[in-house]
Image (tube, rainbow, N blue to C red; front, side, top):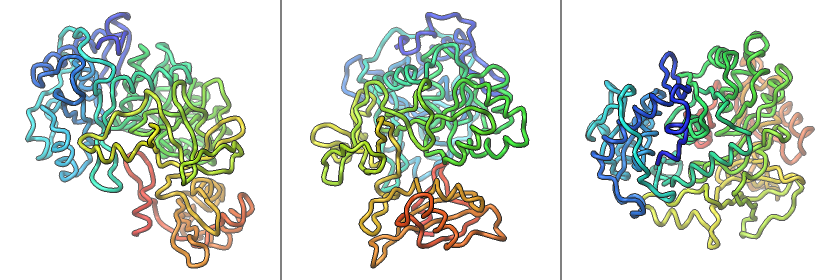
Length: 494
């Protein structure tokens, strides 16, 4: 429906919308290109009438490279009322075959000349013409109809397709506009992948819904960030790996310092930004990075507000319309706002997905009897309601000596040690403690890595003695996924 992006039809046609490197489209050009692609999509997929059963017909895969074509393809799918299934170009053939078999798209949208792997080549190909000319369709979809089917990382089995309705995307983007004072005057810069919620929904659909513009770097670089922020961009989105590179580069790059100091908003997400990097960026630029918290299934749940306190280590407060609670293992609510009592985050609201595609069992297991989504993330709440995530229930909650300990706060403490470049913390079985805390360290100087006694004392002084690591492993690098998150199962098995 065109009202999803009012600026496509109601704003100035010459207003900048998208830029990828040297390629750019105005809102008028984007409307024409997306309109043309939407028309072809409706013919190719047999779009169901408004109000039909979710997922009944009308799905298209999108070969989600970090290009203009991907952005035009997803906008076109939304305009056509077709559910888009973003495909990670770095996925292996087995995973792609599973996703395509599970989602059964009618075709694939891709840039002309794209080299597609065998599982994708079996679909009818609709090349995206970013210079096409067509009309923006009239409204053909309802708020509850599927907009995107985004596949989760599949840490406990094959990836599951989270069906995100149009309502969820609109709700989350409008809530972020409220929290971040995000308007059509903002120009966003980022270099995030476009097969995931962060880069695609927030980083492309977000600016377009506001009537603003996005400049995609193609590939992240600190030089690109400095160039765009010094050239009129107002907002930067990134993951912790990107902000770590920025923090490392700031001391020797006055242009980068100037760029970040002049930005209206610096936002980090997809994983926790270490407090050490927060402080280094603030000290060099006078600007604080703010964090938000979301998941594929829930889109965005909380954020530090633009007019609030950017408190390192926290993800702010619940966004408008989002219900959030912490619960104990037995399901009883955590009522203490003491910054110490750990509970699992559960959420509900219009920002949530509707189902895991073809997985009614998994969908039912994901929700409580009274309709709250079990995130699997563990957190504490400060007295003023700020949420501080301490880790994933499955991998980051360590039960040691009768205490429930979050890996995240130990990782932050380790990163404050000058001899530690990167850190991850896991638990392993211990006959006495139940679990013992294990630190995986990338030393700043591989020739002189800090030892167990030094690091244990460092953590015990900052946090508490029961939170000190009992084992330390030194590594050359931590295993990370495409979004910069540490893959802890690789550590445990490695």
